[in-house]
Image (cartoon, rainbow, N blue to C red):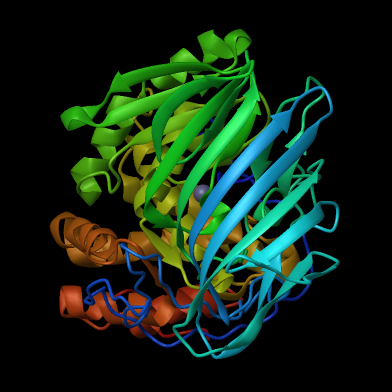
Amino acid sequence: MGAAAGQTHSTTPSGARTPAAPGGAGTPSSAAPSADAPTATPSASAAAPPGGAVDPATGASHPVVDDVYPQYGDPATDVLHYGLDLHWDPAAKMLTGTATLTIRAAQPTDRFVLDLAGTMTSDSVQVDGAAAAAAHAGDRLTVPVGKQLPAGGTASVVIAYHGTPQLVPPPMTRPDIPGVGAQVTASGGVWAQQEPYGAFTWFPCNDQPSDKALYDVTITAPDGWAGVTGGTFQGRTEANGSGVYKWHQPDPVSTYLVAFSVDRFQEETATGPHGLPLTYWYLPADAAAAHQLIAAVPEVITFLEQRYGPYPFPTAGVLFRPDRVGMETQTMITLSTRLPVDDLLHEFAHQWFGDAVTPTTWSGLWLNEGFAMYSQFMWDVAHAAGGAGTLDDFMTTHVLPVDQSLRQQDGPPGHFKPTHFASTNVYYCPALMLNGLHDALGDKAFYQLLNDWAHKNKGTNQDRAAFIAFVKADTGKDFSAYINAWLDSPTTPTIKADGSGGTTV
Ligand SMILES: [Zn+2]
């Protein structure tokens, strides 16, 4: 997600980047055990690979109880694959869907607990072809399996549902994000922004980052309307006055990273660096603004690839909205046409940091935003009109001075206040931490570290302990005291990356 408006929308690095309004005390959370890169091969018994790895062939992962938002998601439920057949009626503003979920029991269980908004109606539920009496209470849909499943056992759950998607209150204070989930526009379109949760407002799911899954989605809408999600667009077919848009997502995705919009989009295709297929979707009225950003996409991708290695997925694209949104939805960024190029770069940077490698739980949000923000600062410095000095100068002059007030307002970045999700603290403070690592390691080792982090861990969920262990293994140096101080300290740490300067934690 892009940083809050007013923080990063300056056209040069010398622009004002002022912190948000003050808040109260922070809430601690703990780091989870470490995890390694994927090593297992696909398994017929639907076991998940070790550590934070996700099996790219089956979608098997390691769901946990989220340490910030435990009210969503279920650790016994591991969705391997979502088959979504969605129908959008713009006149009635009605979404009608059939969701076919292949679910693995991550623990022995006789039920799967899914998230589905109370505003959506569950019309029927089947488990392995037999009708099931599911209970829909609040935003939870509890599906009895009809027997005790051992860990690793799988079942097919088919849920027919309908309703008008509605935003749910966001756990954040940002004025640019009034709600999370899918929302209907005045003209009958629909689109979603669902971090840290909210996918459950438009399909039944295990709505937490630690359950990555594969997707096949078809979206049917009347002629003149187009349905967009992430992955590879497999084409439009015509059926009874409607268009059927078919999508296949070949890499595991967390629910918060699934793009969704139906509107009167135009499609445009292009070829990016080294033949990367690019697809853009925009409203005709937004064509000129979209093209200003589209023109920058190849340079943005190249800028990131020079630092972090190859773009990590087989396709890329941007779903342009006229609304206020900047979201790193996997392989299909959801972006306002009103944002500047450095916000486009921010969302592309997340494809390496957040999408290819995803936090296990939301206390790891800094693993997304610190890296994307630092990348954005790099771009800003590199493109500053008139010259802005070095990246280090910029961080010291423009970012470091606000670090302490951000920690006071929103909590330390490693355990932000749960009601202050995606405040500026998780962007700026870990970007400063990364800048210290950059200074200590030098360009070559630093970029190699980030390149290795993204590519060796691609498709996995990771956490703080894993990052610290990875940095040590990759660089041969122990930065644990330094990294922990920057993530935990309520005041700006004085410790340097070489361990000197003491610690304030
Ligand atoms: Zn972001």
